[in-house]
Length: 337
Image (tube, rainbow, N blue to C red):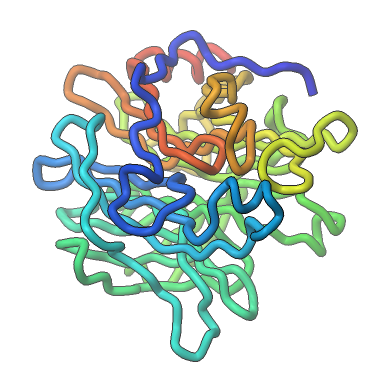
């Protein structure tokens, strides 16, 4: 695929990254793919922390990247830019019997005054998506775990038609030709525990800058024109990309897209930008990371003045921030119809 560039409406935070391994007061190597929301007057971040190896050890051949362990850390901020990490991780679902190996890639949504966290879970029998709820980030009650294979789940911040709604990305290799070819789906629930009435929202073939897979990114935010939501889009180039990071071979590129969904029936797309919202261009996105050329939005905060803070993992290594005005983001979607 050709060179991709970010939309002109996006402005990267000058002091990116907003969080990296050096900010964490316990073992940390890769700090990324965070969920962010505003709760009780503060910005809250739960972040994926992969730890155990350093880049020097990987480059020297003494350790391999996939030997990393994972937990979920917690940080707070007064302005959404400067973050203070809590002394220890806040969530780890690994089980004593070894069936659940790790939990990661959290996403946060506040619904009716409570914080719900979606996350991915690696098990010995497949990758599952989970939903937990908390009031204090100290105790999490797990409400739901999917069957394999499903992930990248994000919740809408209110019930629609009397039901909870989520976007998700199942990955059916067998029925999609034996390879990556994954799409964005939507499911509904009466109680956050039992989910069904599933619908396809967006197919990978409908995104011009994706040839591999797509999936949800940050949880949707509500606007007068519809539900504004980001998604991740992946293109793969095995011919010209090789060792693009720490691993022996990394040939994918992740970009962030944006679309607008109908307020009353969010399985319907009102509009979608035909170009990426954020593409990997900055040095911390495109070089020196675990997996270079990766953008993965995980949180969006709509401010009273219309500014939208978009938080994203970069190069699977650090957490970053970009901003845009909500009207410009909506225009990107509606003018592309």
